[in-house]
Length: 232
Image: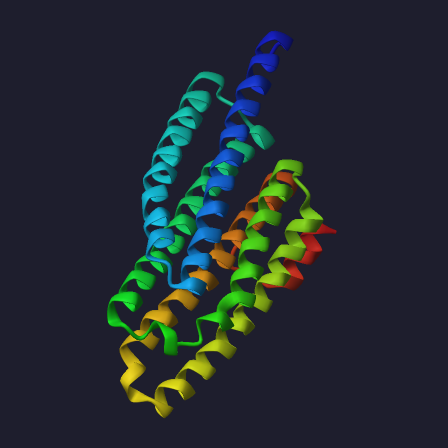
């Protein structure tokens, strides 16, 4: 690739990367609003999350179309191709994280309609939600800098979200046993907790693709010890 074409490719890559970060910011906002809707049982905030989902979906489609065009015209190889693949995978994970935020919002609407919201321990989901939101933000920052050390840290931190989820499930089971009348609404809250846990998984997925770009190794479905050896 001559210098002129290389400069054009860099410009196109910069443009699509900016779009991904914009999409990430929108999804982060969606998650924050969903968590607020859950903590306050706010119908208005929940509906706002549902409305944002349309924009997130359209951004994924637009970015994928742009990536396909770049690949077809530039025919990148090696690390450049891995980066474009990672960007595509990142947008898919962001869209799915947005789906989870929307799922939380719809569960909030269901809980409010049940009339049981004031008796549920929704505030105990705050720690898990804060961890997941912070992890997604960190994953996007690491992608922008292609920082494999931060990517590795993200993969380890995802375990903390899993532990919060497991602890909340145990509390919720006890809660339902003490008051069977809340079982239906409690199950909605359980789905919210699972959605938050999945947001953490999507952040972890993005971290895996960062390592793929920089190291050329696919570390999905491997042990953390193997990932550490790749990063070193």
